[in-house]
Length: 393
Image 1: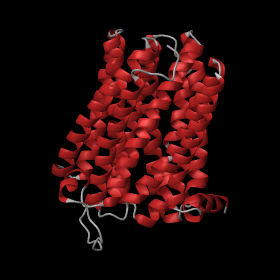
Image 2: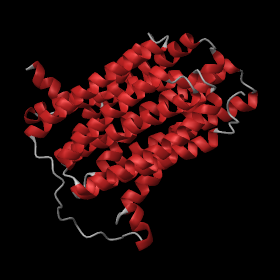
Image 3: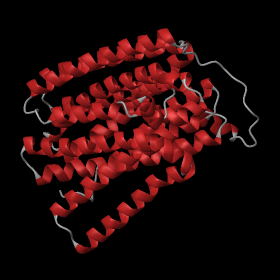
Image 4: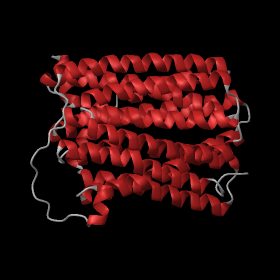
């Protein structure tokens, strides 16, 4: 009886419990691995002139993500989704091994930038693999109910990883974190195989209603025959650019306020823990009900409105000449708020929007958005931050 009430609360039907559990565990393990690599990359970058090297890392990571997205697109057209998903996770394990070697032997700026680029490629591949399989297994109605829930699986994992970051004081600790990441990715591979053995994961073409409007032939090469994909890709580009700028400003202000590396990591880790736990609560308990009661259009407006409010607040702080401590609290709050809204609201809704497309179309649209336009936005953010006028020099 208690379990039934809990399933009703989170929007899971009895027949979906096993499937949702597998996807939640899969995303949880991916989240542990990804955040541990993220922590390792940022620890090294914050040690090496972050004002100059963070934008460089963002720019090179964007190029690496575009190349990885192009490769994924090629194999998406030539391999069944089941085989592609398994090979992607094997590639993630290999990338993590390479990063572990770089952490062990490389202490230069080039190694730090390469490690950050490697993290971004891993993030992209795990995202494409997880949501590619999810988009095929769940239909449109299930996606509205369940994408927020299964997407929340990585939030407690990332909070756990941020707590582990408190223990980081030397490169030997980073190697230990990366070994844990390797184990988590291998566990994700096991849960993926369990999912594939119990579900037919295949992107079959289906009929769709005739569209009233379509894109010009010159745009169809980049966006497909869908204005929805065009609008979503442009939105993701803008969100990624802003996110890169906010993340950069947050990290650099923290570094200027706390010069000791251990203190920096404690502060950053505390903010990340709060961010991921809040995002988990919003995703699990509020996203589904908000979609039903508020609607997709209004939910998508929340992130731009929050950003506009944040910019107005920053303008006021700039006018009154706020000191470093106040700016640090501001960027901390802005980073936390935007990350929670992005992970708990924007990402699940963006995935739901693609579900009405036929399976092959939705996979191509997701790959195009995440594999090209999100890195493009990050590159634009890096270009803006390189001659940074926001943060103290």
